[in-house]
Image (cartoon, rainbow, N blue to C red; front, side, top):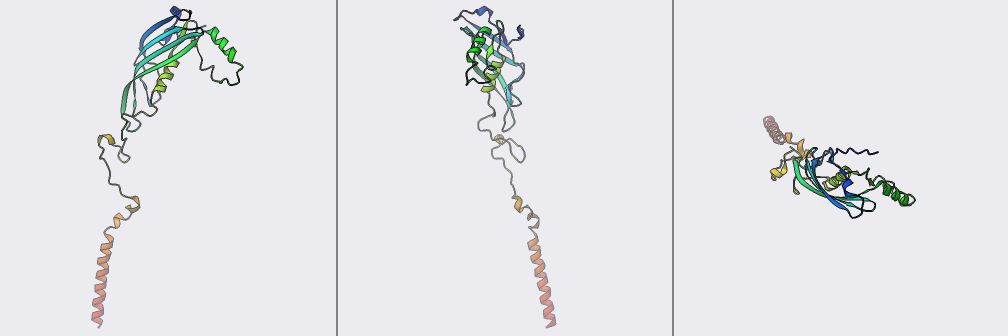
Length: 214
């Protein structure tokens, strides 16, 4: 029983391709991006934005080999200055979707292999009847093509740590920072002079008193 929603634009029908190895057909489709196509809260394809797909479907002995290109617009935030940024993305991908009976034979051959990766079965894509779901393959291709730390420009200077100003807008931006070790002495800058005057007056008074005694 098929679990795929045939109305989903990322679900494709291979019925017209047939199962004769060597058969090939192309498919072009423009659709709305699904949710979560990218790196969460960093950069990605906005939900319901336009994605253009060009696919080549080839019938092989074990299933259908899907080779494709996707073009989309991505949006995100610069990790240095936090300014919004966008770009156009083009990714290539290729994946084999196994026929159900071929996948069973494949698993039977590899079930006893000592070096079999436990996650290999999860990484195997299968046809459901004549249909396949492109979404997981497309998602992996897009995520791998996106930068984990996007920047608006390679030489972005980021933000001022004092006031948050964008440094690329004013490279000469700076603050006259005072060494906190000397900050406590700023209020005493006039004190030494005042103490000197007081000492001088005290010495004068003492001198006059001594003269009067003599």
